[in-house]
Image (tube, rainbow, N blue to C red; front, side, top):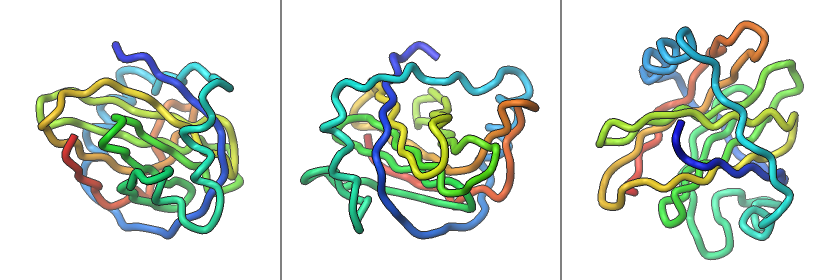
Length: 157
C-alpha cells in the first residue's frame, strides 16, 4: 500500500449492519498478503476526539458514512479521505475496513488497538471518484477475514 497511514485511538458507539459481497475481494487479498498494520501516532488526536459521546457519525462539522457488523464499525470521511475503524467486540480479532475505489485502488485499514478503540487511516484519494467499503474482523494469526461482513458503504471522494 503506497499511502501513508496514521492511526489514533478515540472512543464512541454505533449500530450493526448486514452481509455483502466485497469480502471476495478481501479474501483474495488476505490469501496473498496480510493486512498491513498502520503506524500508530499519538499526534493529531484532535481529528478523532469528536467521536467520543453518543453520536460517532460526526467529527466536528464533518459527517461520516458508516457501516458495521459484529465486532467492527467502519466509517469514511470524504472531506479528509480518512477511514475510521472501531473494534466493538472483546475477542482476539482486529476490526478492519476493506475498501475499493472506482478507479481501481483498494486497501484495508486495520485497528489492532483493541476493544472500544477507534483507529484512523489517512489516505490521499482522487477527488470526484467513488469509494466502497465494508467492516469486518481480521485474525492476525491466520491472516484470514472473519464473517459476518457489513453491508456495503458507498460515498463520493
